[in-house]
Image 1 (cartoon, rainbow, N blue to C red):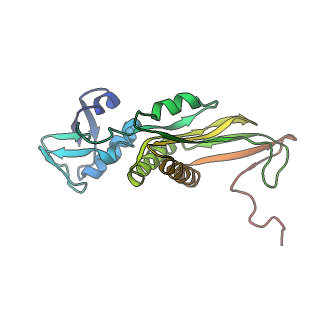
Image 2 (cartoon, helix red, strand yellow):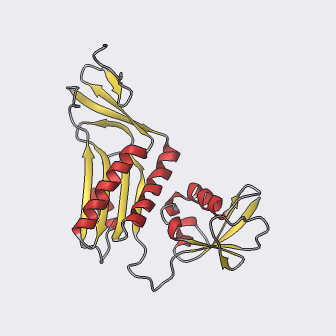
Image 3 (cartoon, rainbow, N blue to C red):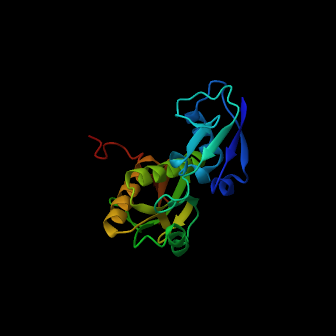
Length: 233
């Protein structure tokens, strides 16, 4: 079935208007609607956990079925709440990253601390010398969605955080190129450091990005696919 969804406040800027149409299964629920909207509009994926869905003028639970609904609306947090909406930047990019620009995008007047992790390509691995570059490939659509999901989780689990940036490199990289950029802002340093560390581990563990190491001699290997037992015993 095709449904029309009304959007309000800042959501209109992300979806390009006050109304959007989406295709859903006939037995779709509010949770299904959230998932479809997150896939169709990645820029709001990290915001949706804080957005209420109204069905026929009443705020609905995620298990509410949408068949027969006369009006569906997305309701962002209302004005008057404390701190405003946290700022979020996520995505896959070719390096170099605009580090200063990204920090600026997730900074705010109420954030007095900024924790930044910037990964770079090094000239060796723990058991491999003469690395001259890396090749990052990704399941792009899924990676973008997972990055947005991680950002939403961080904001939920670290409520003091006011801004999050999760950027991962793709493509051919040389030694010194950026690989990962994580930025977390908050009023105080402890919350920013904790969220940044948490974010890095989740990005490394869950985002579908694969790394190929290339040596000066032209050899290469895919990280994570090395033989389980290098000794051959």
